[in-house]
Image 1: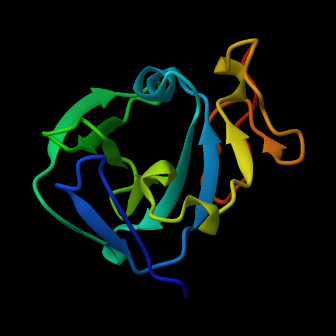
Image 2: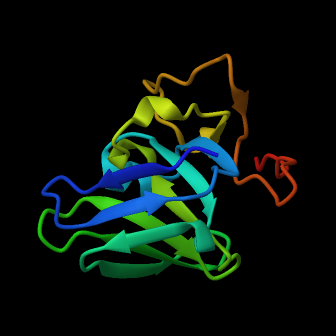
Length: 144
């Protein structure tokens, strides 16, 4: 197991990840596009393996699934760091771009690919899921 660290842009919030990511995915949902003006690379991690220093602000919305999603960010610089879903409170999403060494992980799939803009550069060498993957790793059926 590799311990990973990261922080926000201004350094006011730092974190340590003491667990291996369960999944690393490029998300093309509209919420992630609003956050990053692009797709975002996210790690799904056990909540118990993530610790942080500094104060976080939160914003909660209801996802297409109907679940509440709480996104956490630095109140000083606005860097989006973490997210959690009411459906799976035992996990956290960590934004890979905030890692000290983002090359220490590699995405394994594109999710919500049907929401990607026409100009998006989706890596054809990784799995493509049109919407949200279901627990257990199987893709949800594509919606027309």
